[in-house]
Image (cartoon, rainbow over all chains, first blue to last red; front, side, top):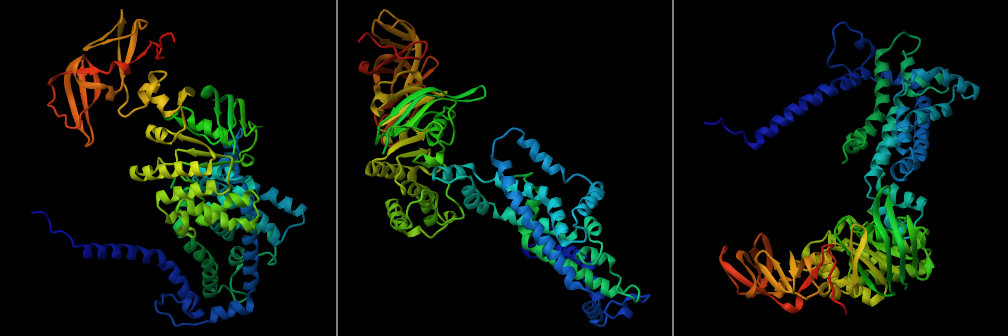
Length: 280
Length: 348
């Protein structure tokens, strides 16, 4: 006889065990970070790991008193949010033109825009440095805003374009016969219809911008324009040597906004990353 | 309200000719149906009238004004699309309101006009819903309301019923016809469904391969087809077209003979509608191929030589297959077409 069939309940249990196990593997480093961040400094540097630490806010107090975390966070938020706004303002009309207007070289221009993303960033690091030096924008949050916008513009354009391609052309034809012009169609029909795509593109751009390191390090020469990513790299815990629990806590704080963004767009993320490779 | 004149319009896509040298006069308040198989140029013709596509040649005049190069938004033309094309982010109310806003109609008038249009298509109680929360028939009615609300000079309808099921299509058809008569707006309607064309149209334009095959009232198109394409396209089942030879007043094909006028000579095609064929007599000697009762009538297929001939038989007619059978044609309703497919007509 055939082997006994598993009941529905058993197979569900198995699924939960496997998925739960995998989730634990993925989450363990983050939980370990968190546990280091909230234990006393002495417990961090023992030769034998202590799995059940005593809870302590030492690292938190150290950060709050000695380290301008609020300033770094503010810099990050200004530069990232500003860059996303610039990206959307440029990318939405560009994506619409690439998705809808018939003109010679349309595909070439689309590919050229995307190809700017293929270049290794280090290649342009030195020219960018001199460019911003000439413009007097070194060590400024505004410079970071422009750089993040430039880095992500191609990606944002392409993600939005792929969503726009999925909007039935009939909708625009209808709006046109109803008496709407191009800008009205873009504003009232196209943008609302591909809002999920625009949000996805914005969040992906924000995540890339938050994590941007190379150009931030290049432009932000003092803590004036440090964002979380560079401040984190420079952080050792102060004058008393390397303070691991404070580093762990800062890392966790830097990680939280990204986590929130990813949770927000989880539903659209895979779609946004495949970018019209398979039309949804 | 307006008449529409198409003068020698033409649409080419590179080497491909979508519509060739088409001239057509559409009278004020007329309901004109463009009928043809897919790819025949009917939708392209309509899109050129709408201004969504520019002709590569010719002239379009709407209401006495030349519109050939005028943008769609500046033509007073409303269009209903096959896929409804309702704006998904707006409520039905806002959808119907959109053309009023775009055309700068005073805000004070909006509400009354929207409700009037919605009532006309019986959607009054759905105004605050989003299109996604409506059924297919309701969406198409909403699209109709959006078209009528601004009282345009011309309605264009591009296969508006083809996404609906058969039953709904019938009731929507009546509604569209009623509305057009009520509003007296010149209407151009594109379809590939001959029943829609026959039931709705004042006049039908039959198109094939980018060219007009025949223009006429439904009766003319049905009873006086200009060529084999029209003859074979209209009617359900369509006209039997039997290729044979005519000589000295006699048409002969395998298993088929019939009297024909003396001016019909040589290789010709005989056309006869299934309802003009009757069981018995001597025009066709063949075998029963199949019998299809539909309730109100029975369709009989007769194999004569290698040709299958459709006969509309009496309701109670029944037969086994492969039984010898003879058929007569109604001699008053025989059509003859030449080798070029065009109808052969005697000297008037």
